[in-house]
Image (cartoon, rainbow, N blue to C red; front, side, top):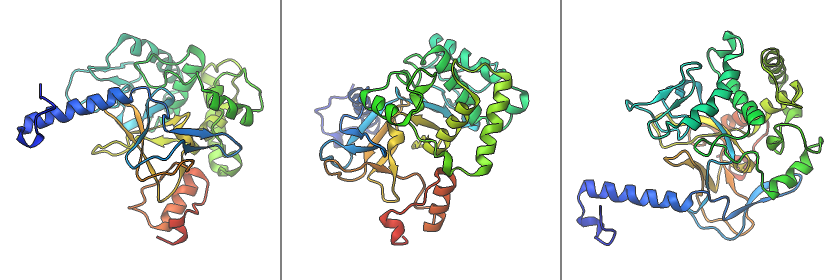
Length: 331
């Protein structure tokens, strides 16, 4: 154990490492469960996230995995934990033999996680083999979503444990955006936009074909129809957030978050989305933000693309043309 009062420059390399680990653990404990302590949803037709008060650079606004629905990319399913998203390495681990798409590290190997996974695994294995080959990102996302609709949210050891318990702010957005007036399964994601009228004809056609094929082999949650699944697929494309990890592979997967998905884009962002060692989504400020200032992240790697490439990429995936100050200057 390293005494916090000892001057850091007098410590050995191993002691410094232990001290850094202890500090990180203390920060994680402090942040655990914090839900936008320094930010709020501005509810309206164009709902967005803004700062409650003046926020300084480096402030953590969000630290939880309770409100997001997330999956690893197909090529990382067997090498990363499906709970905390740590790389598995050579450590003992559990891998689902039925689907081969869900693994747990030694720390997250819990019976409640395995039992809940059986719901999504049954749906995944119930579709034709052709649907389960290659890129299965959308398929696994839908299977997880349907499992939540039918069996309730996953246990607290997995991401998304509070997805079906929206806050007052989200309830207000539901009322503004949802015409059904409640009662339909899966309404917890209905507050996120589909951008249906902006989607390409090819993507709308793919959504329709996927939903109809899925319907032929899988029982839908009560009240859920093919058109609702088409909308979900468009919500995924429009609102998906990657897992930006400090990792050699970069982005490992993507999620829909009932709060973070309201972060708008700028090529000169004042916030960033990162992930801690426990799989919790963190939103951290990159610069000072005034009280009531809009919180912005970037949806694209600004450094590696030209202004035109950024605009094309953003329109292709998110269906909007960026008009931030940086783009206006052609930078």
